[in-house]
Image (cartoon, rainbow, N blue to C red; front, side, top):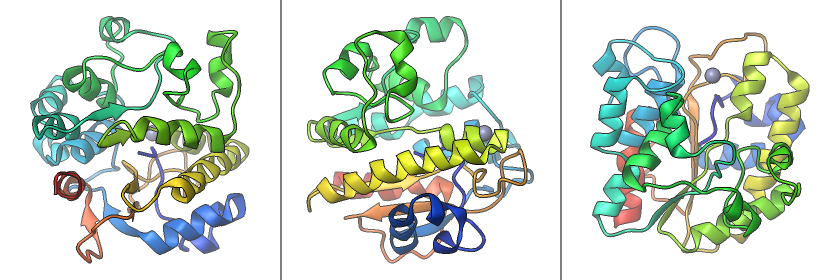
Length: 275
Ligand SMILES: [Zn+2]
């Protein structure tokens, strides 16, 4: 899940994404369909409702009557805990993992600070633990920035790695599970800051990471890339956008769909993994 990655109105290959990482843009252009993130609710799509709908299949913006930014409210947390992609797959006897490493705070500390994202709530309720520094050092986790560059201050043992090495680590986790999630949000952060250099660095790392995963994927593993709402494709505004986001599937049955809504993603993913 890539936060804040909308489809550029010019198309991928004619956008600045193509300048930042050509192969990544081509990959998105060839293998993705547009996803509407409005959920039939007025206003600009936001993370809390977007991610809740993405991971639960519930039209959470409709339930709230609005798009909610940032962290999920009590009502959204109830929706997430009630059903989510991790819980659903575990109940179907499958092994799931959240590959991101939490190195600064434990789940308990995040709960006490009321600092819990949709994926944190989902992981806490369905899996019960998150990966940490030890998992990073064992190459069994990926830090949110992909390269661990910003994780180095947390431990003298953590070394910056290439996006290709991070891809290898993610696949190493994925091979031990039926479904593995990785969340990346520096695209959204660069968009809010309208910082083109940060976005260039972010897309370069993300592009190298994703392209390397596709090279080592094999035939029996699928790669899915999607987003919660637009943002970084329009660097002229500080806010999110209403542009559609990509749903990219490699080795995935997308039922010849041409366009979907964000709340449809859950069932497409669930159907592919359970079948
Ligand atoms: Zn945002």
